[in-house]
Length: 626
Image (cartoon, rainbow, N blue to C red; front, side, top):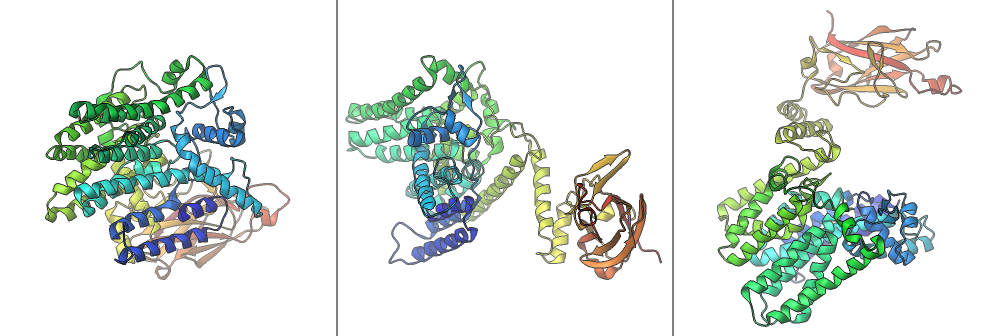
């Protein structure tokens, strides 16, 4: 809680150092408490690992509301602060895209579940903002400012962590502590759950996992109790109703306890079933009342339309196997989870059947939507409500793995997590395809190797030179010698595809003048990063022109921060030669810089223009002449 509060404060302009200090202190406290058997109760080393990782990841949570999240946010703000459901001023205050009814009135197309789940963090954010404003901080306690927006997304992350802890507890009962930790970490980091807890926490999926997990775990615990009261069953019904209001498609899970009770016919069947269904129905009626208020009597047609229901045949194969966000294609771990239900059947065949039925119903419902690929989704996001069923299946798999193979299984799951996390970055950047389109394994592999190569490039100087060069080569990194012969001409206006990191700082965007592609310098210096395999004496030739021909200009050419030549620049395009002795070069990346004696803003501050001293066409490197 303290870490997330500090994270929200940092998003609002508070000190980042405080967030780091709280992280370090909290992780240290967890380690201390977990290591002391006299103090330890619930917390042990494995749970300390899970909580510590959650604390370390917390600062990566995106702190802005966007997408569908605006429609939940305006409901929370309007009800809590304006005490109404007139949403026009809420959208206006947020400067957010406005969802409209068919008649053109501001509305929310989301069910109210996410708004309900966001209410506690919104209230905490309001209290914090009010206190900070009273103490003189420059923050508005109006429901629109950063603490509110960052607060609800941090709330989604907190709910996700609670769901993981609930799963760990249930899996520990069934599969043991070690298997529980490995399974939960895999479910978190090797599925879309991590993405929707950190990169896109404003959508309903993180909250969906929390409520669905609480519902399934509560039902499974209650299922084992013959003397459970009607009040307890009503509480489970309320959780199920809330789950339905967070994601309408998750309503299929509500049927599992009903089918279970009707099949097993335990004593006091009606006394269990009636309070369960009644409690769920109460929340359903609340949602109906809100829809009537927002949409009027024709609410059903509007709800179907905004949720893309109807007009298509089920695309079951696409939902499961398509490169366009297919469940098993994007998240191979889920195949092992489904396999685990087979192992569960050896102990509780009927429960395994229920899990399979819930899975089949969810797939059928979501495959019947017009955008069965889930629009801009990382993986099959609409099935994240099945996370507790998947987690229990994975726990069963790990429970039956022999001790000799458990380490190998953990390594395999760790590799899946790394693969998934790299996939997140590639998907979010849109570098392979738009986010609503397919990504094949071939495309992904190329992009992942490229991303890893960029990481290696970024690690230059932090790794031993020989290790860096070996890693760069093994990942297919190109040397300047591979780009051209004898070393290569670098077109500054058209960065070589094999060297996407080549153009460094100090440049404007590329331009074209006739048949010349160029970049203009920016500021007092411009740099490129050149990977050289073989160190020797070289010569650099630079073709450039001054941007202010009437202003005297001198260029200093430097290699790895050491000046190696000076040239006076004349009017027009010309070539300038500089010697690069081997003593200033190194195997690996070399920083080549052009340092300018003056810039337009220094020489002609009265003339509004870009601060470009020169325009550069190309730089060519070749062995030095004898």
